[in-house]
Length: 456
Image 1 (cartoon, rainbow, N blue to C red):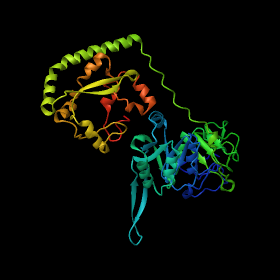
Image 2 (cartoon, one colour; image 1 turned 90 degrees about the vertical axis):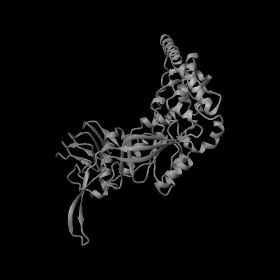
Image 3 (cartoon, helix red, strand yellow; image 1 turned 180 degrees about the vertical axis):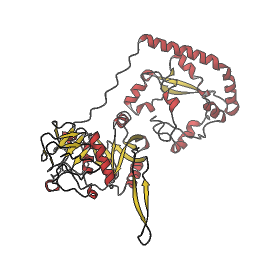
Image 4 (cartoon, rainbow, N blue to C red; image 1 turned 120 degrees about the horizontal axis):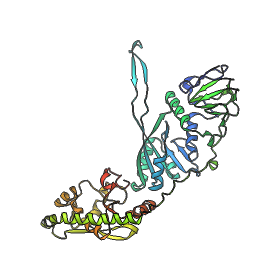
C-alpha cells in the first residue's frame, strides 16, 4: 500500500485500519504523547529555552538558560544566531524581538448570507503577505515570572517596559515564522516547518527513536510498528499504536498521530539532561603586521596634515562666528579614551553654550538615546553657529590635530569616554584595541532611532 501522510492532511493514517480524526481536533492530537503546543515547548527546550505564557501554571525552572515570553495564542520559530550575538555581547536584561513572518499565506472562501440566512455569494479572503509578531527573550527568571503573572499580553508588555530600565533592554528585528494555535491550518503549517527544522527531537522527547533503515528522517514511537521495506522521503514522525505496512512509502514532512487508544503519557522535560548551548567562540585578536601598522600610521599623519593645511583657511571665520554669538572659548576639549584605555582631550570647535553641562542635568528626562549617551533632536544647548557647524561636520576639524599627535586615526570607532566604556566589557576591549577615528561605520551608518543609538 502506498499511502503518503502529509501535514496538509494529518488525519490519513498509514494503516488502513485506523479511522481518521476530526480536523477540528488539531491540538488534541498527539505524537509521542505530545500535542503541538507541547512539541513547540520541547523544541525550544532543546535549545535550553523555556517557553513562558500568561495563565500557564507551569513552574519557571531554574535550569533554563533563557526564557521565551510569548502570548498564549502564538507558536514561533526563528533562528537564534542574531539574538545570541546580542545577548552575549550587549547582555541586556530584556531583549524585545520583532518577528517578521513573510510566509506566503493562502486564501479561504466563506459563504455570505442575508438576514434570513439565505445564500448570497462566496467571498474569497486573502491573508496578509506579511505578519509581525512580538516575543521577548530574557535570561532573568524574575522577568519571566512577571510576564507569566500578567492577566493579558498588553499588561505583560507594559510591565516589562515599566520595570526594566531603558539601558537594560534592547529591540531586535529578525525573520522567522509565527503561527496562531487557534487555527488548524496554522498549526499544520507549524508542524510542517517544525519537522523540517528539528533534526534531533530525541534531545527532549524520550520516546522519539530514529529508524535508519527506512531512509530520510524517520522518527518512531517505541509502540509503533514499521514493516519491512517501508520507506520515507523527508522527515516523518510515527506515533504510538500506529503501523507502517510492508513496502509503504511515506512522503514527508509528515506526522502520523498517536492512536488515541494507546496514547502514551507525556513525560516532564529533563532540564539537567539537556546539553548546554555552546558559548560563541571568542574572536581571535587581530595581530597587525608591523609593516601594515607603520603604513596605517603614515597614512594618518599624511592625511591629517593635508586636512589641517586645507582647513586652516576657515579657522578664522569659524572662530569669529563663535565669538560674535557667544564669546570665548573657541574650542571644546572632552576627555575620551584611545587605544589601551589611555585618556586624551578630543578637540572640537565649541558648538554649545558655555553653561551646556548645567542645562544637561535639567534635560536628562528628555534624552532620546539609550545607554549613557545624551541626544535630543532639537537640543536647546546648541548655538546657531553650532547647529551650522554640526550640520556640515565642521566642528570636528580640530580632530585632525588629535590624529597628527597619535590620539586618533582617520578611520576607527567613535571616540568614547570612560563612562560609556564600562557598559560591556567584551565590547569595550574590542573598541579600545584600536585608535578611535574621525569617521567610521557608526558615524556613516547610524540611524539616530530613539532608544537605539548606543546599541548601534
